[in-house]
Length: 364
Image (tube, rainbow, N blue to C red):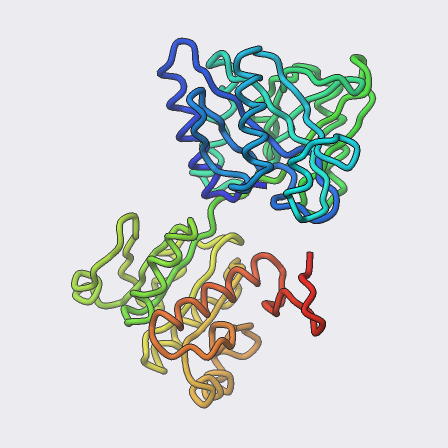
């Protein structure tokens, strides 16, 4: 699936197509995968009429073949469902080197109406709302022009499917699932058996860094490069003004007492405390008791962290401290890399270990 950062990039590109009376482009979407593949179901790539792409899938041989087939779809204006597997007989499979299987939906974007859903999608991301996007792409194993439905806890936000019974069947089929994994459903309907790709849409990860330190100044641009929304927090407005802030970075002046009201924290956000003042770190961390964040970390030596953990104000608070993975980092840039990697591991529910095992094999 695409990250929130990639989705925003796609949305911007799709909106630009509205300037064209007759847009010439195709949207390629991975609908099913099996085994080891370069991306997961739900991942999209926009192919423009001149062959340029937005949000590359792999950059390798499979992508080149998908782009070539997208050009055919643009010319024919008919959607296609392409299979890459051992039975397809395509030379590209020999060059993939991963042994996986793919199913790729390629839909022509011949009118601006087919991309109406992006406005609702963009609104969900900007309002930091979690939602689910359903794409109906086949009926009785025959590919059809995709129809989409977007919904959240508050109800259906966009619906091209226009079949209330089928819409409810899709919602009911997904509701019991607690996993955010993208799935492809086959559901009976009055039209026949429909194939529907359902994916979870989440807002961009938000990182709040407390303290205008050298490590903070190194961490913030790295987080921006990852597509995270970034905010620098300090209780001293003079330090915030003196800090050179990367483009797109927000700055908030907040004391520990005003922190919770000043920051829009949610389950897609992380906080790293690095003021280099032990008492201030403790005060800021204590203010975050019960905060709905995915990750809470604090910078410091093991001895300093031990003093934090022994402080009664932090009793029962789960803090990643010292923040970061153990990669032997010393410089501010290295520390920033270690912290960003640990945050990614936590939000992706990984342990941050090596990809290879003791025999040198690559994990899937």
